[in-house]
Amino acid sequence: MSNLIHRESTPVPPKEALVILSSVLNELGLDEVLATNSVQSLAQSLSVCCGDILLRQGEIQNHVFFVVSGILKACHYSDNGSDLSKEFYFTNELCFLYSSWLTGQPAQYQIEVLEDALILQFPIRLLSQPKWQTVKIALLSQQLIYKEQKEAFLLLNTPEQRYRFLTEYRPNWVRQLNNIQLASYIGITPVSLSRLKSRPSNKAK
Image (cartoon, rainbow, N blue to C red):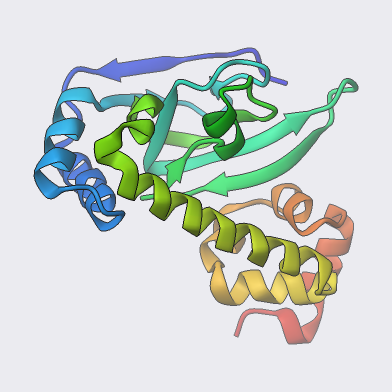
């Protein structure tokens, strides 16, 4: 597990990134003016490197991360140092831990940088403010649906069906993640994943 934390803060977040984040929050139900003002006044731009840690396992979560570019990862490290991948986050996605947000308890997972990234971070306390209630409800609804879909993905499909699902519905995962990362999410070994990829029916056309 990397101990490196490297955050290069830029004083003014890129204008385009601010607009995109404001739009995402607006689509989640936040008033357009409030979304723009909140992002412009509170969002902080960070350039981070592969291996950097944004939230350590066991720490209190204070920020939401918006991925402008690059890839983030949520994972859990066991006592023997092995890690279990919980989720991956790509461009234009919000990254934070729902359970830690709702309970205020220390994070069970670590959020780290998988590929050099530019992110915008803003205080997670905003999600609990009354004016952000529509955002909170929308996020919880999305997460519930996603959780149900992920459970079905893991429980009701064979490893090959899981791989085919990712190639069809999340092709960026297959393109941007290596075999170790992708296999950990599917729930198989990298060797098994290589065998799946080599089958004629699974090869890219």
